[in-house]
Length: 166
Image (tube, rainbow, N blue to C red; front, top):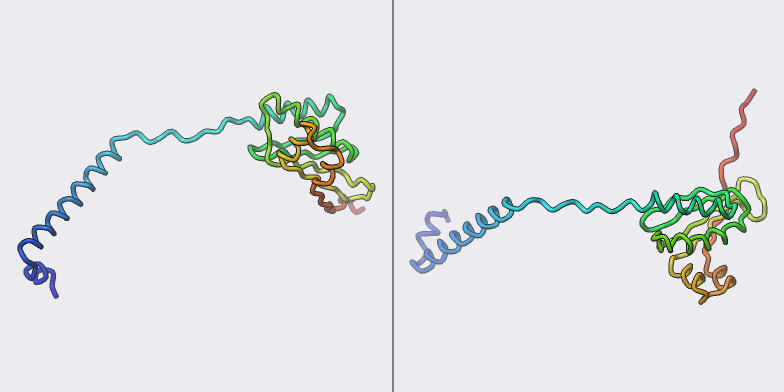
């Protein structure tokens, strides 16, 4: 059936209803277009860069505790790589409490990468704690033993150093 024949087959009341629906849709479309084009676009969300100052606070705190480490902080996590003994991971965990008082953190995840405690070459160990686990320990609601049990550990092997051939 052709569109013209379809329209002619409608009763007068059906044609009036069809025209009313078409006009109403046109009015809504034009009104929406005018409303949307008349507004200025919203400002983009700009998150403050808290990573850089917090990294500086953490690095200074590590130096004060004689912890040789590098730190990277994102909105969600704190990543620390220690070049000294693996026992310094505990210093890193306690330092997170100090920098939290400066407005840094709490972080969803604190990951500390340390040399292998057994001294194996080209082997490193990662300790991971969530923010709530660390906070319980910092508040004294969890002991060192509890924290050590909750810590996730992962051993990985690094590539051996490249030696030049003669």
